[in-house]
Image (cartoon, rainbow, N blue to C red; front, top):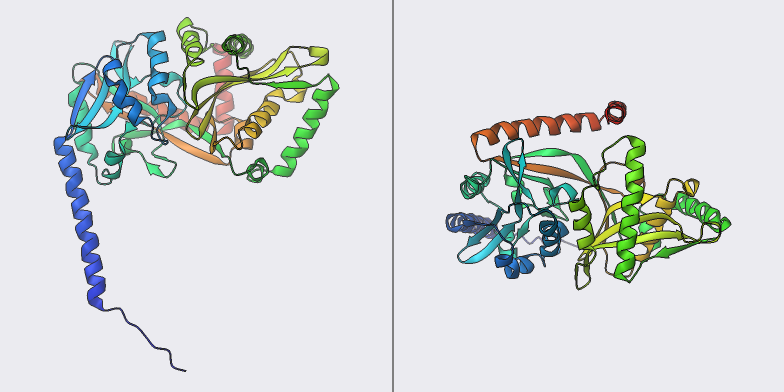
Length: 411
């Protein structure tokens, strides 16, 4: 039996290649035209941008930390000068970068609103702008941003940006960056909790969970608490501040939650809800029996779309520490989120053992460093050097532990 051979004419290959080249040129032309039309405006208030801001934040990929409600809670608490950047192409909003001005040793640094308490930042971009940005000229974008911020800031410093997030490359990746010393850790949530655990050492984790359960039952049991009343949510947050303050004191470290503005910001987030999304909700492990009513562990989580972030957590170190209540609380939280439209549980920034034990995905973050003035050039150089130094130390466990001990002794 002879096999018939069907050759595709060379002309067809040439035509397909030519068509692909034409499409590529059209895309490049589209981007060049968009850049030519791109206008960047500066706003010192959020309110004029609310409608378009809320429209852009509907994108599932954009970070919760650039959402209107999150930024409103921060601005209400801190009252820093704003320099919000809005880009428009052909009359349509292309992007919003929610930026505030932070003074530091005489320098004016433009940073994402609430950057000091953000676990991931993306900015807000329209779908059309994202689709047409493959050949975006980073140098031209940088020049436009410099022009917009001239006289307002010395340095544009946008931190903790993943250059690629959930299979999408960030438009800001074309700007000057340095890799941040901190990485983030995520656990994809699959169809069932059992399938999710299969990404980890499921047998060992189940064994540990059973041991923790027996210890907790031996002292009278527990309740996994998700308060519906706002008053209970605020009460749990105050408990977190107390427990975290004691933890920082025991380590000889400054309490990053101590100032009244940060506390007001987090309390403000508790009442920020947008459909199924929420700025902050408290979860807790409350003991029964011998320790009736005592909070052994608690966490604050946020949700935007199918992405849940653990913002912080604390345990009562005078209570049932040998039962690993924090670890047990993560089991309760993650298992309870299945079947509720959550695809990703994010443990946030910072390399800690419990995060690595739960999270099979590690995400690199970068800082976008763009000098605006002469002093900004020096500041940007210093930031790069310090960031690279921290990354070098953190990549070497022995050196990192030594640095932590020194920091604790210095206080």
